[in-house]
Structure formats: structure tokens, C-alpha cells
Image 1: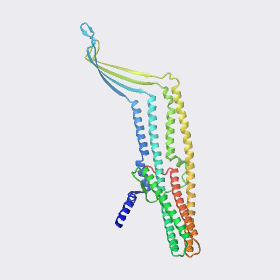
Image 2 (image 1 turned 90 degrees about the horizontal axis):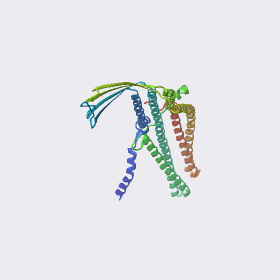
Image 3 (image 1 turned 180 degrees about the vertical axis):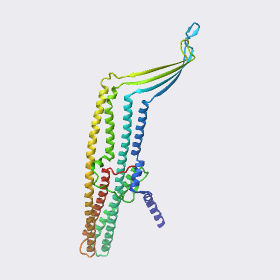
Image 4 (image 1 turned 45 degrees about the horizontal axis):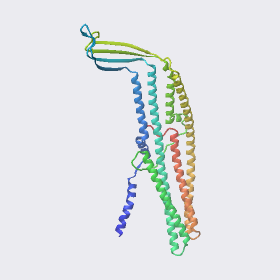
Length: 422
């Protein structure tokens, strides 16, 4: 019977233990690196660069010479004759080639330069996507550390509550304590057990979130706690703002919009194209040569388009104004984020110092009240209250530690120092 119960316990505990063993642990740098290499958002942004480069290749091809060839076989009936000879043979093969050389094409040249700008915009968009994924991965990594710390605090509180319950229950069974004290201690122990389960679920959810960001097939655990080197305040904010990926993206978009707006006048310019067309007939007719060629120069100038080009020019100018406004707002927001992040680092450092001191004092209160209870100088109400306050103080200290880590990470992000260039 005992062996059967043991096997049942192994079957019940086996999946959870196996699940805990299969969760891989990574460092902060490795988590960010893998997320940047595998996240679908990064891959989609990289594909946009390839697409923009392909569009550039297409636009560039429109400004280069082209060669076309065609082969046609004509069959006619009846055959028209003159002096006994056929004017056109019944069956005739016509081989034609066409060589087009663009000489003056201002619109095509402008489109080529605009396509180059779009490639740069796509590259900046990739950098911005990398920044967003890196920040999300870093936040998820820090969340695991915080949730794990909360779990440790709740497990320690549960151990204290269990020890207090065992002591209060022993006193009650020995006739030295009251049942009320034992029930209070058991109630507190049950509450702490529920908190431990919630904390474990919080850790697992954070691990799953990190795994999704890293494009892993399962949850991923955080390894060692990262250290963030905060940039010194000697660097001017203007230089830090210009180095940010989001600002660089808007600058690239503004440059592309300004180029399109400045190229609007080229839509009114004429275009010149040279054509050369050789032709071979086999067999020849009565009045046709076996070989001939034709050369021409096409001069095209747009005269009337009912206001289409004027409307396009106004649309491009409006887009420049929109992007310029976005840049102004982004730079203002970036400067605000830098100032706020620096103040947050200083404030959270002070808050962490006070929170740790409060946790130390709360632990001391727990020891004193426990000794007083064992000596019979007080009831277990004071012990339970002291344990709750100690748990809350330690949780507050853990939250303050997490706030400091996040504040330092936010400062690196705000100053363009995270993530580092690939």
C-alpha cells in the first residue's frame, strides 16, 4: 500500500518537477540578443528593408536602357501578285528588335532618389523595432526577478507562520495555550500558503512572457540580476536625443518627405528617349528589303493634367508639415523622458534605502514580539501583526529594488544607450 501511494505521489509530482527542470535560464544580455534575432517584429522589419531595396532596383531599372526582341510569322491568302511576282509572300517571318535609351528623364531620376530615401527609412524603422523589442524583453526579464523575489518573501513568511502555528498548537495540545491562538496562527498560515501559490503563478506568467518575446517554444527563466551602467549627466541632452532610434526614424522620414516635396517641380519637365529598331524579313516581298532599321527621338512634355500635379505637390508639402510636427513632439518627449528618468533613478535610490531600513526594523519587531509571546507577555495577535508588517515591508523593499532597476533601464533607453548597436 505504501509503495502504491509513493508511486502515485511520483506521478503527481513528476510533471511539475520535470517542467521546472526544463525551463532554461538565460542572462539579460542573452535574452535581449535572442529576442532581437528571432522576434517576428524584427524579421518583418528586416523584410521591409528587402522590399524597399527591391523597389529601388525596379525604379533604377526604369532609368536604364532596355532591349526588346520579337519574332512574328505572318500567313496571308490569297497572295497578291504583280507581274507574276508576289508582293507579300504567303508566309513571312518578321524579326524585330527595339533599343530604348532614356536621355533626359527628370521624373525617373527623382523617383530613384526617393526610393533611396525609403531604403534608409526602412533601416531606421528596423532600428526602432529593435529598440521596442529590446525594451519589452528587458522589462519581462526584470519582472521575473521581481516575481521570484516576491515568491521568496512569501515562502519565508509561510515558514515563519508555520513555525508559529506549530508552536501555538503544541501549547494548546499541552494545555498551556488557547484554541483561539492556534486558530489564528493556522489562519495566517493558510493565507500565506495562498500567497505563495499566487506568487508561483506570477513567476510562471513572467517566464512565459519572456519566452514569447524570445520566440522560444516554452517559458524562459531569468538568470543573474543585470547591472546597468547609468550614463553620466555631463553629456548634453541634445546629443542624447539625436542618438535615439525613434528620433532617427522620424528624421529619415522627414528627409524623405522633404525630398519628395522639393522634386515636385520635376513633374513639369520634358523627357527625351532615343529609340533604335532593326528589322529582318524572311523571305522578302516584292517591294521590301530583307534588312532595315529605324531610329527616332521621342520628346514628351506634359501640357495639361487638370490640376493633378498641383494636388500632388500640395499633398507632399502637407506630409512635410506632418512629419516636422512629429519630430518636434518626439524631441520634446525625448527630453522629458531623459529628465524624468534621471530624477526617477535618484528618487528610487533614496526610496530603496528607506525601504530596506524599514524591512530591517520590521524583522527586529518580529523577533521581539515572538520572544514576548513565548514568554507569555503578549498574545499571538501581536506576533501575527508583526509578521504581516514584516512581509509587507520586505515586499515593499523588493518593489523598490525592482523600481530602481527599471528606472536605470528607462534612463538607458531614454538616452539612446539601450539596446546597443548590433
